[in-house]
Image (cartoon, rainbow, N blue to C red; front, side, top):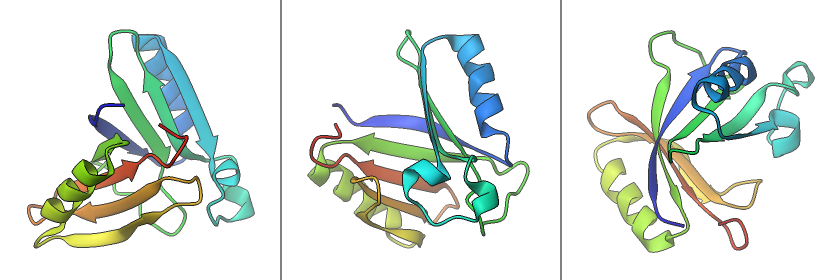
Length: 139
């Protein structure tokens, strides 16, 4: 899998509805995982909220989105993160290292409950980034 640069949108509880709308616009295949399915700690009231969704359109567009995780504030107008994903561990860790220099690591790049390595940071210019390195068999 090549490394991809994807827009990642944040929502305040309506990620599934929004991503289904984007599917109606762009077509393609939409996959959705809830907080309950993803193995992430969550309030039982949030079990059906979207932990991660991904729309792969026939034209090659990839759009990702999720509901704001429990305990993190949702700020209208600040609803996008740049996501780097793929299975090239060395390449993606290199990007992580460079992007985190002078920035703020929100979640260290480490093994996630879904089997990939995942981390979140804000670079020194204020741009939020997520890096996901596919685990063995997840590429």
